[in-house]
Picture 1: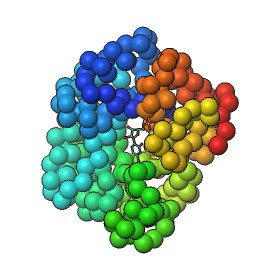
Picture 2: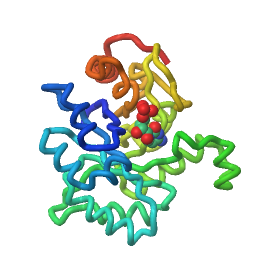
Picture 3: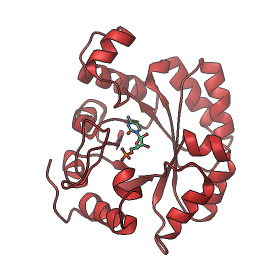
Picture 4: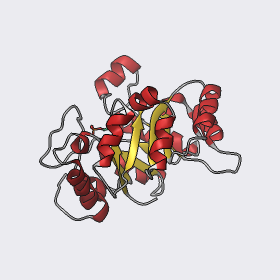
Amino acid sequence: MGKDVIVACDFASAEDTFRFLERFQGRKPFVKIGMELFYAQGPSIVTRLKERGHKIFLDLKLHDIPNTVKKAMSVLSRLDVDICNLHAAGTKAMMRAALEGLTRPDGTRPLLIAVTQLTSTDQKTMEEDLLIHDSMDRVVLHYARNAKESGLDGVVCSPWEAKEVHACCGRDFLTVTPGIRFADGDAGDQKRIMTPAAARQIGSDYIVVGRPVTAAADPVAAYERCIKEFVDGTGAGRL
Ligand code: C5P
């Protein structure tokens, strides 16, 4: 897969999601479905979006004992999603089990990527709440290496970490990066942000964009701006 922009459809219902996506008319953005929408609507939201021609990143961030995650992934493998994910903190055994569960009888499977450390976790909370005393960068790279060694396809990380992850795990190991904001936009609650143009320069493979598109006065124009900056490499936007 080449570079693409994934729109985070953080809506509470299928109706809100379809109303939003109808504005795109001919275009079919790659969409991210998170816990809120999936738990509200069930697997049918995936089927319905697929029928409409969207690629799907199912962002459910699984984290449990290996056997439970393997069985859950096996259920998810029947949904025709393109990317799904789990927490690298669940250990290499859990990641290997997940991959096994996700692989269909014919050998095909969706891409599987790992969350390293959530962007809502900072050094202080990692040390105080999780008793992890290494630096955030080293923890993220260690988790990325674990994911690679377990056979996963990539990680979700901050765009600021994408270059290092590629240097340590290889150019083909995917970096899927949220925390994207336009140069003239609002940061909101995101702390480590980057523009789509800068994320392209630094080597992110996919950017995940939520509010800069979903809350824009003209979401289609905002999406096109992301495509121009990140996929086409045209348009402004600095680090
Ligand atoms: O609105 P915004 O662009 O901040 O949305 C980013 C999306 O990426 C949200 O759906 C958020 O849950 C998700 N995400 C994130 N940081 C991570 C993992 C996922 O912001 N580490």
